[in-house]
Length: 178
Image (cartoon, rainbow, N blue to C red; front, side):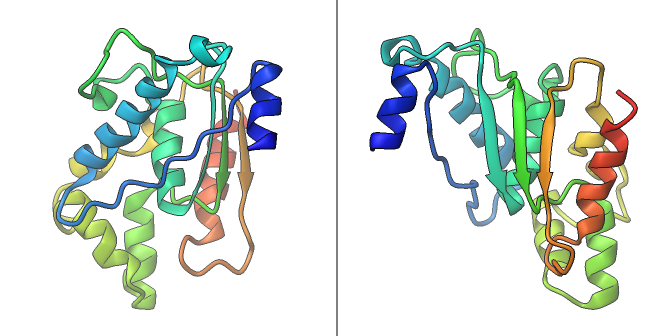
């Protein structure tokens, strides 16, 4: 409480939203949940003396995947969600801890190593991503990188077997030329 209230006095806020993990729903529903939360946090910003035009997002693992989309696909209709569409979902900074980025590569990695992530990716995308490449291309954050993509801080352990470090490396390499 003291950390959050002290930051609010300086125009910064701290919020927490768990990664949406509703059983039986696909990628679009989880993206919509995340975007609705982002829009909803801007509505009361001025009441808490926060600048609604300076928002960053910090997230881990599966939530980090959604945060990556929030940082890259803000101008895409992929992120249209219910709620106040006049509120921007654009963020000015993204901090990720061991986040997956490319679900097709994560699926392939997991299949080869027989880890449970492949079944989680298949559930999220509505089936085996090798059978429908478009279902992987649309929710891939790398698809939406642009000149106005905000800065990213990537934190990833080298021995991570759930979300392999190569996932962060993909994003790092894609962000570098900007």
